[in-house]
Amino acid sequence: MTPADPGPAPDDVRGAATPLVRLPRYAPSLPYGWVLGHFAVRDLIRFAPELVHDVRLHDRAPAAQAHELRTACADRAIPVRRDDATIEAKRSKGTARVLATFAKRWRPLDPARHHLVLVAPREPGNLGTLLRTSLARIVAAAVGIALHALAGPTP
Image (tube, rainbow, N blue to C red; front, side, top):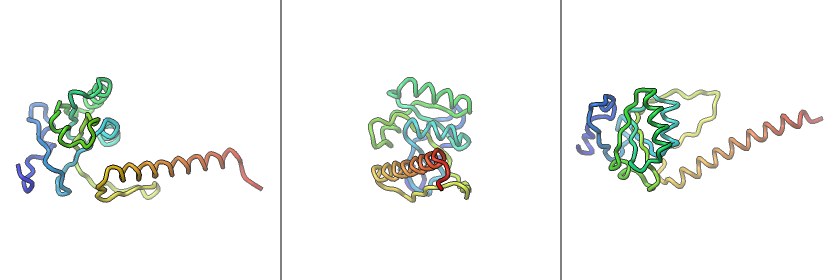
């Protein structure tokens, strides 16, 4: 496996008997990506299960989280595997214990909803700041709407 030939796509691991595919260094040209962390993996399974190739758990994943993800994956026929080496190689924080691979697909955006589009963010800290700021703006807007509704119309 070389950067020019990343090897088989993770969708080749859908069957339980297929071997575990090692993930190469990320490249935008890959037909798949991966996400780290319990919440991100859980939401990927919940909101886009058709895109999930597999879920990989670290041996040190908390039992409750591992059980929750195993159950969600079993309900959707998503393979779950133990893969300490890949998780340790891909994580930037020692706390990530779960990784999911997924198919990259373009989806149309709903014009009636707000969207935040980030193109190739490079620094995890900057990404976190952007997401927290976006969330704060959403919460502030919701609180403003709620307060306006409680106060009623002004003369």
